[in-house]
Amino acid sequence: MADQQALRHSRHALLDGIDDEGVAALQAARVLMIGAGGLGCPAALYLCASGIGSLHWFDGDRVDATNLARQTLFGPADIGQFKVVAGAAALKRNNPNTVVIAEPRFVDASLLDAAILLADVVLDCTDQWAIRQLINARCVAHQKPLVSAAAIEWSGQLLSIDPRRPEQACYACVFDPQTEPAAHACGAYGVLSPLVGVMGCLQAAEAIKLIVRSRHPGSSLPSAAQTLTLIDMKTSSWQQVRISQNPQCPVCQPGRTQAAAGRN
Image 1 (cartoon, helix red, strand yellow):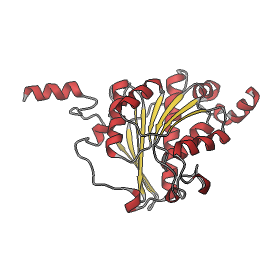
Image 2 (image 1 turned 135 degrees about the horizontal axis):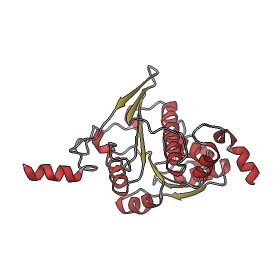
Image 3 (image 1 turned 45 degrees about the vertical axis):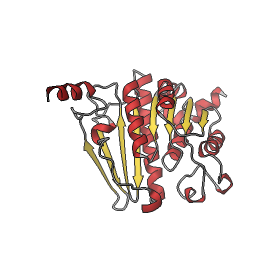
Image 4 (image 1 turned 90 degrees about the vertical axis):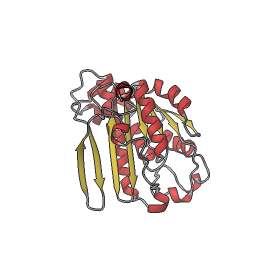
């Protein structure tokens, strides 16, 4: 089995910045993922295919027929099943060596606090504003890396956050928690099926890089400048916007925010 695993991951081991130690780092890593929809399915598939040690997966939704065009771990026979349960079965067929802990329920602050403590990296694959902000706040509180993505209609966005780096912005620095956007659900506006696949794959790639950099100190993977990646699949355009901390952010800069309020 060891020989088979070495063969399976040989192409990653050849990569500059990963090598055998990076493969071992992935095999020892624990990923927490919230959401098992269009983003979560491809992200989970590629993380498990890449050999992560365990995936702790939360989602309280069940599979329905409208999911099948873009949530590629599911088929018609899965309709009515919990997404994480059906997804875990599909992942096991791909790589039985990854331990998938399927939790068919929605997260709250207490569940997140317990799960984040055990994770090397967290993936936000949800589509709910309040939950996105909660995941970010708990990751900042526990100093855990977070990879967040979103997709609607033809457009996608990706943001990778590592609160262990003091200069990094958090999700709330970029998207003000007090300014919730108008509801923009794919059920009302639609979403291109390949777009969610692209965004989920990008999340998996960012998670792999974060894990290898953290667990393999000798890795040559660079820590790139923090950017918000924006993709428009209708025009095939790709944009990266440099972001920086908001000194008044109530999540990652609470001390500064409170001090400023005290002066006013």
